[in-house]
Length: 462
Image (cartoon, rainbow, N blue to C red; front, side):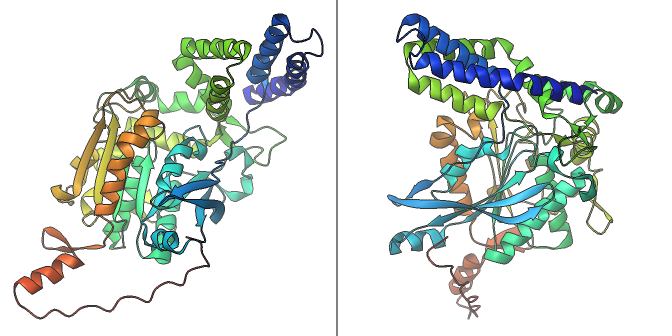
């Protein structure tokens, strides 16, 4: 019933928001009182009213070009794989410069696993834009659950993990190898996905970069962690789960509605948001277009939230925040064939592991992401690295100046250092190049493997 009431209220507010937008333009053009301080205040007030009352749709990535070797490279978004609850989105790069094209061909392949925890994958726009300078980039673009018909079936945390594995296999089949970056929520299912692949003897990513995620939510618990840990599973099921109302393709699907999530986001820092909106009002009056536009861009992203499928959300609450099944070694995941498999991170051997935490992170506390190193005992210490970003909060580790200037260089260097396939020998990990060098040093004849045929390029796109 709550969801229906919210939609009724939203429908009722829509004409008022449209009126406020029109009134803001009318006063802003001076059509009523002319260009006077009063008209400026009226225009600013109506503009603020419009933004408080409007409906926020899914934003666009809107990445048109990036710089590679000093040249502008055109970006085109392509949906590589489409699943009911997710799209594997590729940012395809185009250039006519021969030397730049050669650079693009040689750069590592990166799969970014975006969070499915309220906001859309576009929250990682800055992450994608920065990575595109030096990498081939793909991202998981999760679908709003209210747009998925009931006929598409259920979606559980196990399905999330199976999706990730399918995307990794696709990139490995396409390029021979890949690197994976997970931000916040997906650190847990990504580690599970790669662990299961390693246990089966499948090819695994060359490196895993895990940023600000709840691998072990018991360490330095935050307000978000405490809510998930202190309320019962039944409380979440009875208080935050509703069915999608009429008017959407997913009518009848059980979801954790986006508007409830947004209410929780704002409730964490209400004073900060009130101050931000008042500052926006003052910027409009002063004519500070740059500051006003920065406010719009932030809240266009922040206010856009998606519905999460109830089964997936409740599975996450129980598995990650209440039973801690990953760190306790008790997690069993159902594969697409319906068989349960135990998650064993210790079976990962030939993958580099980089964990990143923000010193001031109030979403995933200190030590929660670093806990991955305690689980991945099969990875030798020289292929493990942890980086704490001083003075950075949760968003600062993957977006903004700190991400671009401090975090990204670490990520780029780690991926580059692990961009050659490794093979396990005894308890050590060596690259094929190391094997050749060792054989030469021992003055033994070495049989070099023939290189695989070069994969045909598609025009001047990489």
